[in-house]
Length: 104
View 1 (cartoon, rainbow, N blue to C red):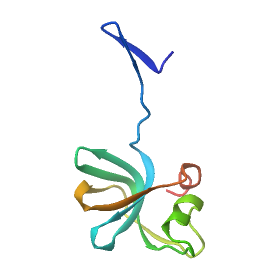
View 2: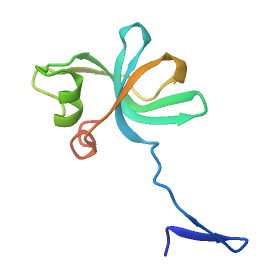
View 3: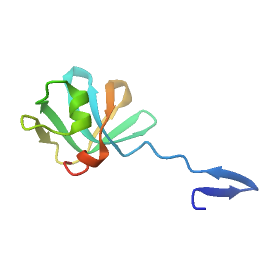
View 4: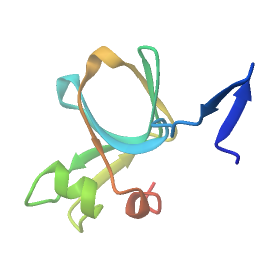
């Protein structure tokens, strides 16, 4: 089985990686961004990042995360990755991977 490895006679099972999940991240000073989130220590990165300038929702960011962008949603591509310190994160919302993977 590929998910289990043997090291010095002990079995270890792979734990799914929470890195690279699509998240909406609310940062200090009101920045709301979306991208594939990675965290290593206190260093964070959003890959294929965009700033969400206008949510375009009636039920807030949770609706955007679950249902994907609406017709009035306005996003500005950052042209690549955005890096920031974890201490600047106010909140992070996991997104519907199936919908958002097509949009980033």
